[in-house]
Length: 207
Length: 383
Image (cartoon, rainbow over the protein chains, first blue to last red):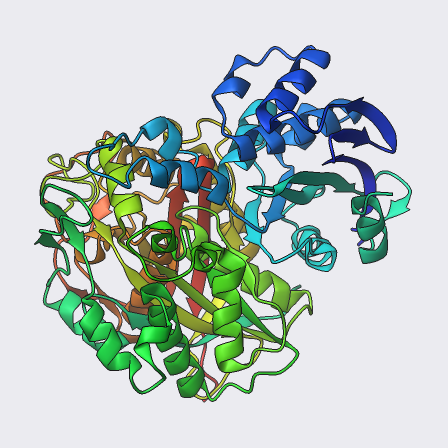
């Protein structure tokens, strides 16, 4: 059985730079807010998906990284349907959790909103990507102290070895008070770059 | 052919008791942990929830350490893991994984009235507390995938063991009743006006609960091992971030994936412990998915009527009760059910019955379109 995975494509968003397969897609002013940057990418890419603007910051980051990556690869709708998605970060949804917490802290200023509460889960952005691309494969969201290339490799391989998926969209999508960064890659039998801890790490690390 | 993976030991910390036997005996007597709560620090109006008194946790925790040094969820998880590790006589090695499942972790650390640092709300920080307490060698793996986390974590453990990432794993799941989650579900108008009533015509929302649970998952059997994890699946609906799919697509796919792997057909499943949150849309979605999977005749319960919805803990808490159903060959009542309230039929368990339970399916569904299904089978004993 040949379930050997390669890294077919990848996309990272770091320090305002959006890079896909080594190619710079757009660089945004890192001093502006994340939401302004996300809007700039949306316009630059000519997306027509107004739901994007209803998302919280983590979901926007997850969505835009996945969107650029998925637009760069040739993948059929059947392949998308069974695609697995394995994402991770450090802060889960704390970025939006804080916003929700602020809305319930005092009786005088009590304004909890279902539209905010629904985003207080780290896997919602993954759900948005699945809706956008009709992905009904395996899903899992993990939290680690730091980017964990070895675990991503091991878990993606366990999914293909156990016949749960042929291709896996993997990565890290983190946003917190200190800043944001994301890195997604498509592990698949296609492509030539071997799916090793070293190559995942190398692609993630900004040059 | 993947190697077999077993459940060795389990423990429960819930409003029904701090041992599996206390929990099961309460369920057998159809006693619920859900009560009307008057906690104005959580919600200004009374609400129904299954909660554990902090004093009770602190008293139990004295044997492990200073209760003032740990947050409530940390103590619940530590108590659970301590018991599971002790019972299984687990030797924690480099090949032992620690897998933690939670929807919101110690989210109460964000509350300004809480004396702990906000850092404790970070899931990797919760992970490190448990890791260092017991001396796990490897970095903990935290699964935070909404309300499927607890049962998904069992699938993660199985997959990692089968692919030689680890030899065994301690899986611990837990979530709290907090101001954060109660006010949140309240803004969704998803809270029931009485103890929740899964699958009933009169259901009108969830009751929230809190619990911690843990199991040892291993490639090895010990003398008490009777349960094998034989199949799993966790598929997305790709439909809506908060509303359940109208077609039950992701749940159906998860169940089919688990059944295919286990080579078990619908008529060979003896018991389903479903998610059954008692919201209108969730229970309806499940009824559709189970019918599409041809499982409408299989005896089924939701345990939310006993525990409330314990979020990320629920899948593991309810699976552990299912293991007891397998051990005792007994079907436990789906508390709160009266008249059918789904458009498709289900075989809801309405009284405690003796019945051979050799195969058991646990399912869960959650926000983000997430679903999970894990199939368990009784180990054939070599005489």
